[in-house]
Image (cartoon, rainbow, N blue to C red):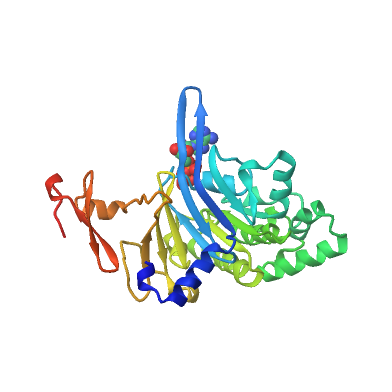
Length: 318
Ligand SMILES: Nc1ncnc2c1ncn2[C@@H]1O[C@H](COP(=O)(O)OP(=O)(O)OP(=O)(O)O)[C@@H](O)[C@H]1O
């Protein structure tokens, strides 16, 4: 809250907010229609990610995570709202611009290793291929492919086809492919979902490397708490909206932690997202724990707002 900040800190916070974000979604809506059925997969989602951030997206099955990635990757378009990536408004892109956006601005890693690579090409050829779309010369393509494979710890895989690689090796090659055109945004949908925990750690380390060394803004959808626990910022999606955010200042050192409603400690701070109309969604476990029903009572306190279960509605004030 601004009354807790010094004027300098307040200005710095404002400057940070007006800087162009890598990703900015405003009131994002995606409705799927099949016959008479309508599913609102995204229901006014708000999201801002700064350049160079590494963010994990978590949420129950069906909460809208893949739908969001589909839109950010340019494979799908929103039904309403605005989505800007690296300065481009995606909702209004034409077909040609969309293809150009997908080739230049986005790197994508799917959950299933075989889906990421072309089976009859070697690892080096897979990494070289996307660069052809940008007209990069053959020798430069090969050199960049080897450099990226090396940085992903997969140089020894260069002359093997995907069928001769383990699942973890395939995913590390897939990250190199995703980085080939120096994208603004690296998206990964459950990239460790089909791997054992040791291999998952190696693939996750490769994603960190992509973010740290190559500086690419990285967004990873994951169910894996061990993975989410190592990311500085985790955003939870519930019912098609961003609901909570958890910051872990110690995450860079690889300090994994369990999940749970943690408000504030030396290591972890949990925030609830407030949309532009002032709406917020209380985490489910708090709603249950404090027996919150229908409405809450708000109190103005110095420097913060108190949220109280409504006694008349049966809640037990804490
Ligand atoms: N092509 C589609 N047609 C109709 N409904 C869809 C389609 N794709 C997704 N949905 C619905 O939209 C909602 C969000 O789906 P989405 O795949 O984005 O969720 P998710 O959080 O990625 O789930 P999971 O973790 O299981 O992959 C779900 O109710 C899903 O059934």
